[in-house]
Length: 155
Image (tube, rainbow, N blue to C red; front, side, top):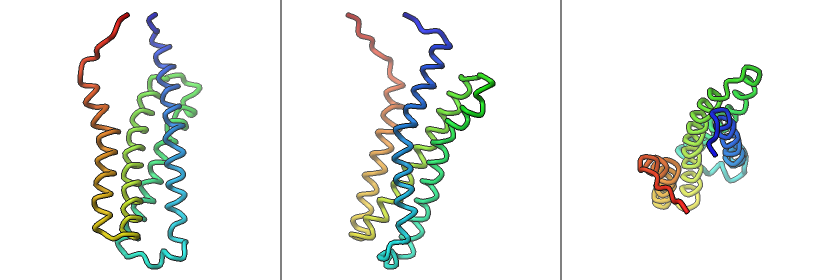
C-alpha cells in the first residue's frame, strides 16, 4: 500500500509531535534544575567560571525549551491555513536546533557539576564523552546512515 502525500504529511506531523513529547520533558527538567542551582546554599563556593558556565547552560537550555515548544505553537498558529508540509519542515528545523541547544546546555550542566565535585581534571574527560556521545548518536550516526542506500528485505 502506497501512502498519499497527504497521508505522508499527516504521519510526519504526528511523528514530529511525538518526538517533541519525548525531548521536551527532559529539557524542561534540566532547565528547572539549572534555574534552582544558584539558590542552593553551597553554590556560594562555586568559582566565577562555574557560575558563568552555569549561566550559559541556563540560557542554552532555555533556548532549547523554547525551540522544542515552537513547532507546536507554529502548528497551532497555522492550524486554520492548512499547509502541514510547511509545519513539518519548519518543525523539523526547530527540533534539530532545539536538540543542539539542549546538548550544549547538558554539556554546561555536566561540566559544572563535575568541576564542582571533582575538579577540572574530571570535568574535561566527562564533558568530552558527553559531547562525543551527543554528536555521534544524535547527528553523525543518523547523517551517515542516511547517506547509505537502504537495503529492503522482502519475504
